[in-house]
Image 1: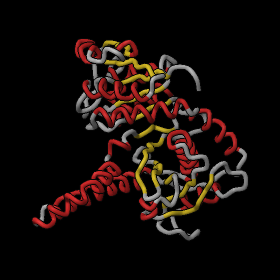
Image 2: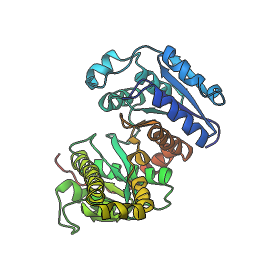
Image 3: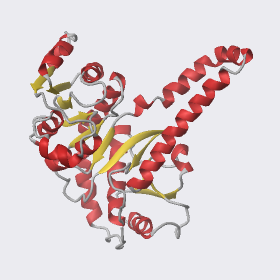
Image 4: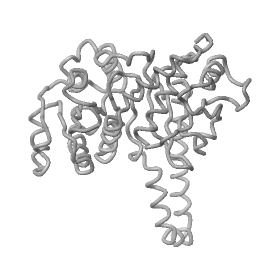
Length: 347
């Protein structure tokens, strides 16, 4: 797609807003010179931050509001009372066609509720799903759903497979990403009815999905497939387990190199390799969970991230816009309609 990319930013969302929002946008602009930003938030706080970036400030537009969504606000309450909040106004800018995408580090539940209300669901998609990029032995992979839907039927999983496949194309640049359904075994008879029903449909002749089949938990880190599809309950548990394991391994490394003088000397020789490992596992490199299924592009940054992490979340949103994510979903859904419906399954 051509033309400048207009990104709406919830400048007051997140643990370190608005400082890291403005700094992150500045980093993103240097990487993506065709990008412009509308910042929604407290003008008295934002103007001095924008003024620090003299060469870039003409690409910032500040829209004042002194209202913000609290981190502990319930989604329903935020939806009712937050119409003039920085989060809601940023989302509305996308819905009104004033911006191409929205990025926020604010309250996840409120962001989902507001985005679903304002942007609506994409025609043909029943439920939104949260997707994110994870490191693997083969590079990077996409995983969804990460918590938006605790229970899913076969049709939901088929739609998640389509959205995840298109996300891998537009953000990771993979031409023919493989898709796997997370299961308790790789055999066809394994798993509950919804998973088996989704697999049957994804294997149908004419399916737009490059379906690998069932995968297990250890296949996530191995990178067996490019896109891992599961329900939100399982996906959230798997994600938190992976994050905890990464922290555990990092702590073990640190403790090992402090164990003795010989270990400290060994660290000097291994410093370069360990620096590469830290960069590979740096969560900032994979920051930016996406709400797929909405009729618009909405990216959720981790609330505690720094400017680099926020810039990476912006990059995810811009990649989706530039590579025509919504158009790809539209085309894929049309092809799915020609397939036999997934067998009915109870939630």
